[in-house]
Image (cartoon, rainbow, N blue to C red; front, side, top):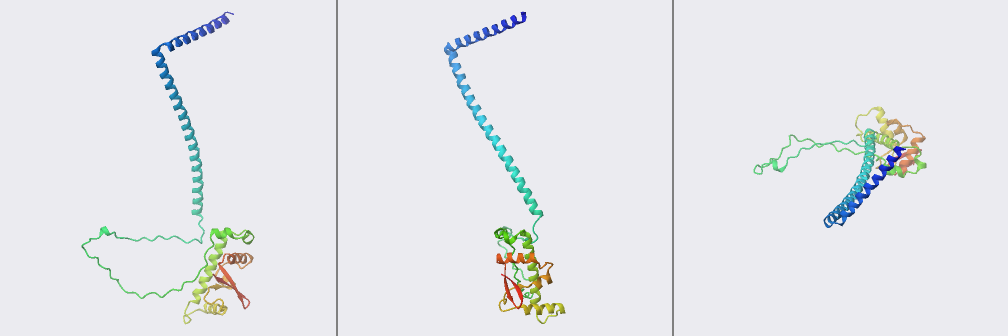
Length: 256
């Protein structure tokens, strides 16, 4: 009972103290000097409140920027992994990049009063014989591959088609290296037989064009002339990489 009375007395005394403080502050607000100071304090509180609002907005903006940067970092990390994968799995049919270093002498390094001497050739060599370029079939691009109808390419991949193109070019190169040999050159019996077969297979429709037949594929490559091979030939016709010339029971695949 005594403790309850003490708590009630303490609560009443606290209320009385708050009332006294309120009355004293009310009296302070009536004095001119204190009133001016309180107005300044009120204005400063408003400014601080505005600054706090701006700070809150800036913090929200920085948080959103931080989230965006994290997403960008994750995206760049994925791109980097893709680039590393492509770097480690470069298709074999792509041309290799070769670096050629050249030395240049800047004009500032030359003495303007000293005449420039033309270098004389050490020796005059006979110009090399003109090499006959052998036409090759261009590889299929990714855009062309995407444009091939699905029923035509079935489960064939971009690399598989270009791998066949690579082997066809190998056969064309091997065939026409033999055909471009002089007739009077020394040939083995096997090469001479191939030479005569190549010339016998030519027609007026293939004159001036590079072509191969299935026998050339079997002779110069490890490709199997099967159903899958003919499906790829059909794709190459669709992409205008080759055309067919038939005659004498033989199908000639002309490089276009």
